[in-house]
Length: 271
Image 1 (cartoon, rainbow, N blue to C red):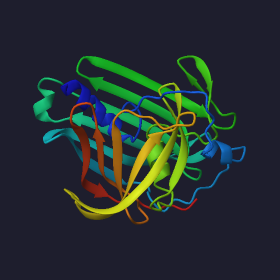
Image 2 (tube, one colour; image 1 turned 180 degrees about the vertical axis):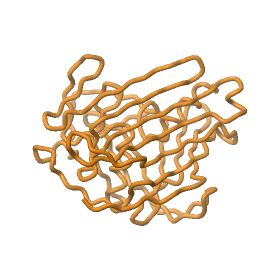
Image 3 (tube, helix red, strand yellow; image 1 turned 120 degrees about the horizontal axis):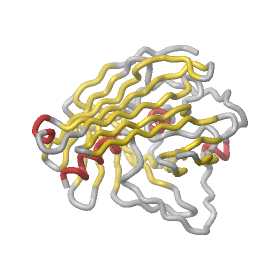
Image 4 (cartoon, one colour; image 1 turned 90 degrees about the vertical axis):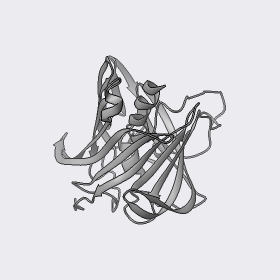
């Protein structure tokens, strides 16, 4: 049980994957995603008033009433990648001192996202969980809509997101209660179309303070129906930042949460 929720909090912080299981059937979905709306090429421009260089969010990770560790999400650097300005996004997840005595977690995930189009160019995941070690990385050919994963060439959607960039792209959207929007995501060798439902407005108090929020629920979109195991709910500030302050996921036994404890706002850049 300890292994499962300590591993899961890294997944929770990167917004999707692992807590859901994709079920396929033969019905065609009617909802539009980025892939159906995208222009060909890589010159999309997305207005981003939500995050900037240097933003850093720190979370406590809990399993029920038990504090298991902490996590960070950071816009760590502005770099050039494939001749384009890009943000280097880094997320870490670590078990606390108590849990580390019998099961240490030191996970790091990085994403390189286009600073003007807010889509992924590169993703890397480094996991250290107990005796388990895993390193995985893949780059996206956004012009030809391809990626190479475990030596397999896989077709991906235009402007595809990875498991970390998807949260930052979601923050650039207008969040209107009762509406949904759709994002194409590639995680661990699979294409995962995602619906994000905007549920309600709510004020929450976390360790970092009290925030007026919009509550959203991401759901994997299968062919025609929505199925998932567990339930992930995210509280984003109801302002231009749309900063995640609380994330909760129900699992088979109990629930996992990520609660904002500290934050540093980033520098908004013009491109």
